[in-house]
Image (cartoon, rainbow, N blue to C red; front, side, top):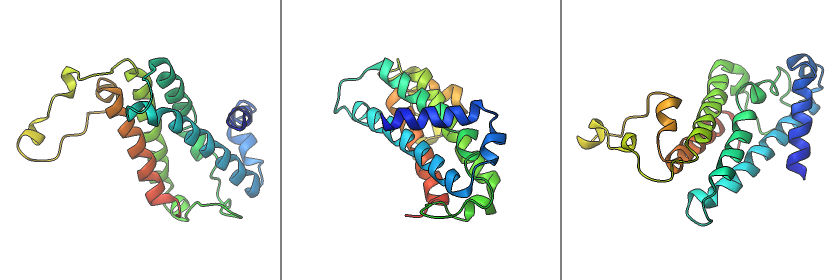
Length: 178
């Protein structure tokens, strides 16, 4: 219920004029709104994780639904909740967000792209031709990253979910205090 209310509140703010409504928020309201958004992302991931780890039956419709929640709450839905001057209260945000907002924006967009790819990959439950080893991995190097979210969407959903998790970790590593 809390997740639904948070998602509705954030969606309502965006529908009321996007950044205009968000800009009118106090710094404390911005912190609360982004904490609610992060709770929504966490809840979606908690639904996905057991399926991706083989601990719960795989449900492509649930994967699509939860990945869409992540996609729809990523990108500008995240960055719009970090206006200048909103590093107040119990925020876990680091000053690095505002010091390198372009990198922060890219991280939020990377999450959106990975989650969008997971929406598309939800029916990919096994190995696919595009999941074959790359030349780099065959030669002992690191596997090559897929060339964008289109290639990523052709991978098995479990692999695409790893990209979603990687996008979360990358952003938290650089922009969130532990």
